[in-house]
Amino acid sequence: IVLCAILFLAFSGLEDPSRPKGRILSIEAGNRALSIAAERGLRDYSVVHVARARKGEGGDEDRWVVLLDRVPHTRLDEAVVVELGVEDGRLLRLRKPKR
Image 1 (cartoon, rainbow, N blue to C red):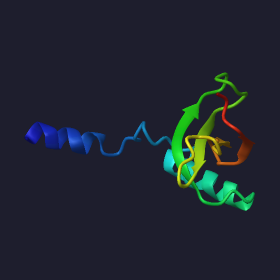
Image 2 (image 1 turned 30 degrees about the horizontal axis):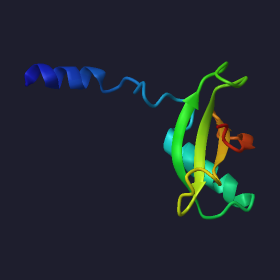
Image 3 (image 1 turned 90 degrees about the vertical axis):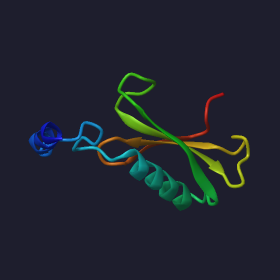
């Protein structure tokens, strides 16, 4: 127990690698995507999935790819993909999902 306490104190000041500084978190990306969709008249949508895509994975920059679907869910018939910049959440693209 003493060893665990020492390690806890030793590592408590280090940055959490799952939450690096300089980028928004996935939950923030989902909320931002919903807000952007609502601003464009896409109401009654919910977040289905949020994924981070790195530069070169289908785009020119790191981004959050957020899949939204209308509620009640339409089995992706009315789904929308919102791509946001990782650092600031700015809108990069709004598109239909590729099947």
